[in-house]
Structures are given as C-alpha cells and as structure tokens.
Image (spheres, rainbow, N blue to C red):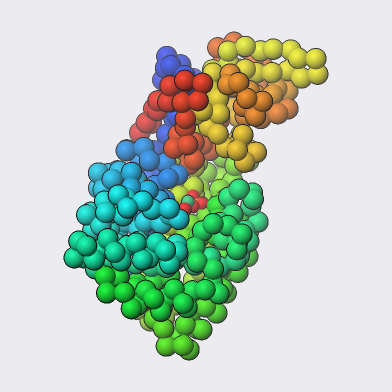
Length: 384
Ligand SMILES: *Cc1c(COP(=O)(O)O)cnc(C)c1O
C-alpha cells in the first residue's frame, strides 16, 4: 500500500512516534535553490542548523555545497562534524557565552554575527588573549515587521535581536577601531514563515538606505547577509512541496542594491527542510467528548511543539483508513491543555492503531523536541 507519497508498508512495523524524512524531496529542494543561484556567483546560502540538526540532513546539505548558519556552540560543533567547511559557518545569537566564542574561534568559523557592542567588546578581549583577529559582521535590527506570528518576528525594535539601525554607526566606528576584530559586513534577519515578498522588499529598502548612509559617512559596509525567513505552504504539502525560491531570490535581485564585488549571504532554514519531514504517530484511542470527538495519538508537544507554541497549522492525514471522513480534535497524551495538534479537522475515520501523518514538520520539529513528562526523544526514518 502506498498512500499519498508514503511507503506505508515499510512504516507499519515501526515504533511510533517517529520522524519520516523524504530525502529525495530534500535533494530536489536543494537542486531548485542551486538553479536559482546560477548567475549570482557572489551569493551564498547558509543552512540554518536550528531548523533541523539531524546528522544525515546536515551531511547532505553540506555535501550540496551550502554553508551553515549557527546560533550556539553546539550547532557549530555539529556543523563542523557534518562536513560544513568552518569558513562557511556564520554564527549569530544575542547571548554567546565565553566558551562558545572560544569554541567558534578555535574552529576558525567564517563570521561572528555580533548583536551588541557589549558582545563586540568581549569578542575583542577573547580574541586578543588568544592572539587572533576575528571576522565580524554586525547584526542590525532593521525595525521591519514581518507579517507572520508575533513569536517568530525578529526584526522589530522591541525584539531582542541585533543593534538598532539608528545605533549602527556608533557600533561600526568601534568595530573598525578594535585591533582583534576584522569588520566584514552587515547582518539582518527579520523573522520566519514569511510568504509576503513585500516584507523582504521592505528589508531591501532599509538596507539600501543604511548602506548609502554609511558610504556618505565614509564608513565601510562590507558584505550583506539578509538572513532567512522564507515560508512554505503548510496547507498543500502534496501540491506545493517546494517553497517559492524563485520569487524569493528574484525579490533580492530586483530590490537590493549590491555594489560591485559585494557578496550577499542568505540563511535559509525552514524553507529547505520543513516539507521533507513528517511526524508519524498512531491513534491510541478515539474518545467521544460531550461536544467533540478526540483522536488521542501517541505523539505530543514533546515531539512537535509548534502547534502549542505558535498555533501553527500542520496538515494531518490518516494513512491507514479509507473510511468516510469524520471530524476530530487530534491531541497528544501530555498533561497540558495546549497539547493539541489540530481542532475540528476532517480525517478518514480513525480507529485505534491507525497511522497518522503530521505533515511539513521537517523544520522546528525534531530540533525542538523535549523530554517533558519524561518522554523519550523521537526516532527517525530516513527514506532514500
Ligand atoms: C532561525 C534563523 C534563520 C532561519 O530562519 P528560517 O525562517 O528557518 O529560514 C536565519 N538566520 C538567523 C539568524 C536565525 O536565527
């Protein structure tokens, strides 16, 4: 039996819940991005490791020639181990610890994306004590809103990320003076699951104004890192399994003013890996409530926290039933009222033991798993 694109017979004997990764789809996605980069030799894409740090997924993305975007020392370690060249690794984060800074220096990473003057000074001190000169970009808070969930916007003045654009010049003057800092460029990242290209146009406009201003004041700009954030279609994973990379890259090609020789970096996470992942779970019980019918499954917010954290929508399919559809609240076993994957969704009628597919969970799924309620971490099945 092959329902949708899933080899159901090979999945039935496996212990649930687990993540299913469609590696041919990942390869196809990486190929689409590679095609979009043709004709732009100074553009480089860094994969945002926090979206999914499964070793095989990292290995494949590294082998395809991408750089890595890390937000912790642990991610830098994993990226190096997976084969990303250290010089292709960029490292952001508002709270890098001294140990993490030392570790990233030891690996010789390509760029520290520095988020405050306080951090800049600590990096200067550590680099000085080790006799190194460290490549640094300044992360700018562009004060640009993204039309996405409030918990995943990062580019507003109220967010903790980056140096507010009005305070950039002062930070930059300090960066170029510090002897163990090599100032290399500007970094931006406005949020995640962005589908409205006008948000990226607004980012380009802000960058253009800012870089013109720096040049007028005879300050260096260096290269540009525009971050990530491209969204995917969670409603139609079967019809639209690849994000709209064409519109995304065309937006930057059209709106970003790039100086001759200036490199442009992108940091894509979700759009590369979300569609290839599916959380597989079994129905434990079907329960009639007073007003609703519950499908109680063996996966929970500990394997996939996005619905509880962001009210995120994931399409759910019953892979082992062809019975007429009924309405269900699909809920997990964890002792939290927010441990709900979907409310009032239509599924082929569920019985105990049915295998459900929670789609488009390759990003911020397994990587955000926890052991709350002393639950084990989920396993995975790599479909080649
Ligand atoms: C999370 C993150 C990204 C990736 O965001 P996506 O929405 O997954 O593309 C890129 N850059 C930085 C600095 C991040 O923190």
